[in-house]
Length: 70
Image 1 (cartoon, rainbow, N blue to C red):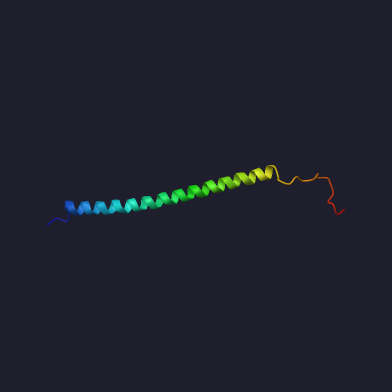
Image 2: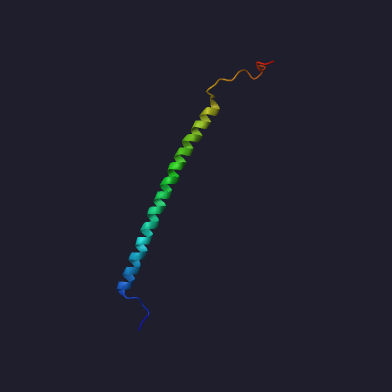
């Protein structure tokens, strides 16, 4: 007798592998989407921080002006 799997056994094995791969692909897709969302939020926050550093909301006094308590 041969150790070779029957065509039915091969088909069942392939269906099991396909189901596993579909599951993994769905999990990876969800992970990539979540990371994409996090990256978008981080980029927006970075842009906001850069804009705040370039033009502060509260204007600063002269650099040579002494503090008010002097």
